[in-house]
Each structure stands twice: as C-alpha cells, then as structure tokens.
Length: 313
Image 1 (cartoon, rainbow, N blue to C red):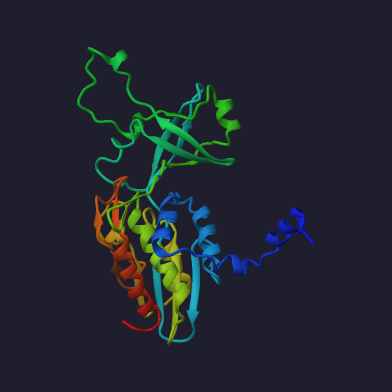
Image 2 (spheres, rainbow, N blue to C red):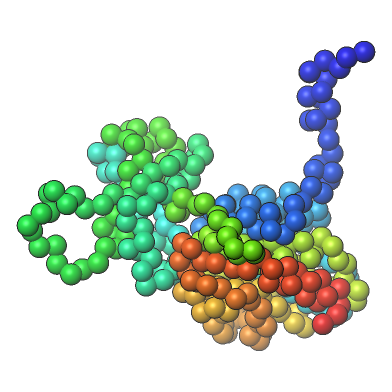
C-alpha cells in the first residue's frame, strides 16, 4: 500500500530529538556552517540554539553559555571557547528610513570601519534577518569640495534597508539595538583554507564541539563551555569561573586572542584565580572580513582536544 504524503510528513516530525542531534557534519563543513552565522557580543542566542542541537547533554546557563559536563569528581578542568564576535547594532532610526550604527565591543582592527563603507550587511530584527547596504559618499555631490583627510568611520555610516520611513523600518522588525554584521560568505580556497569574519573562532568551535561529542572524561570532571561576550566584558567566562569553580586548570580555545586580534581578549583579570592556558590556531589577516584559518590545523586541534578532554596531554 502506498504511503500518503501526510503520513510521511508525520514520520519525519516524529523523529526523536536525540537522533536529530546526532547528524553532525565533518569538521570542515561544520566550520563553514558556523562561519556563516553571526553572534555579535550580547546577541549570541541563535548560535547557542545551534550548539544545543549539535551537542547532546549540553545546557544553557543563566548568562547564555552553552555548557556540557563530562565525568565527575576531581580534578576539575574547564575548557572554554568564545562564540561571540565584535560587531555593530542599530544606534538610531531616522525619519527618512536610514539607520545609524553603534559599535559593540572593541574594533576588530584599525581598518574595520573603512572596510564597512559601501558593503552589504545583515540586520537581525524581530522578524528575521534583513539585508542592507552601508551608503557611500556621492562623488557627484562632493566633486570639487574638500572632504578633508578624516577616514570613514562607523559614525559616518548610513544604513539603507530599503525603507522610506521609520514606520517602514518598524514593519521590518528592526529596532534600536538590533544587531548588525557584514553579510557573510565563507569561502574555502586552496587545499584547506577557510576565509570569513572570525573564521578562527568558528573553526575552533567546530573542533571543540566534535571533540566533546567523541570523548568522555577518563578521570575527574571536564566542563566544556562555549562562552558569551568574551570580546566585550568576558561575562560568560567569568560567570562560569565564579559559579562552577574552582577549577584546577582553565583552558581557553581562542585563536583571536592568541593572534593578538583586537577582537580577542586574553588579558589577565583579577576575578580569575589564574591566567587561562591559551590555545589558538594560526591565522592570516586576523580581525578582517577575510580572516583565514587552516582547516587541516583545526583538525589537529580537534585531536589535541580529544586527548585533553579524555585526561591525556
């Protein structure tokens, strides 16, 4: 007897959540998937939802960290990886429908503002992502006039989302503090290279996620945490240390900090009992829209993390 389409749909919707959570692509595909997502500091919830789907047993704590506990007893080890990125938010909505911008956290680099002018961006409003473009100065209106030597900054930016009024902007679901990011098109090139904004952090996230799924702590407790707001206030990491510690060892997986990118943050903090051990990845052009990471190196990082999570070195 033929199965009616509605019955097939019913079978698909009845698949247990734990089975859905097992469908994880290999590291290179997972890194590309994560690199296509946006998680501006303070607005990481969508990224956290994805991690919860991919990491069975993980939970979201009160500040938004995604946490998985492996093993039990002593020693207690924390392995953390940031999921956020420097970015922008809507700073104002003009009567003519244009948007102004404000930065969240530190600048990703000395040329970050100039790299924004004339570029496609995405605004994440209540109704979903909205495409837009940052305007450029008109060469016709400024011809023959001195514009000075001051470079373009985000304070000069006017963002066009195709609206003619503030009311149209509101109907798009955009409001003040809606996060804004460059439109992302992760690009794989060469044999193993991936280029995208914060590509290093996304590849590190993929490596830690796959390692956590594949191992169980051989001795003691290993807490795996994907932490929020590391680029801005380090709120996620500090919350884990204060509420779940003390830890005999803290390992921070953060290529941005290891590369000295302005978006990274590995400075000593008086609220941490000791400076975390820092693991990174070799990056090219860190802090730029074409930050590049080797996926082959990320695979080696995954193997190192498996050994560390399993109690080895």
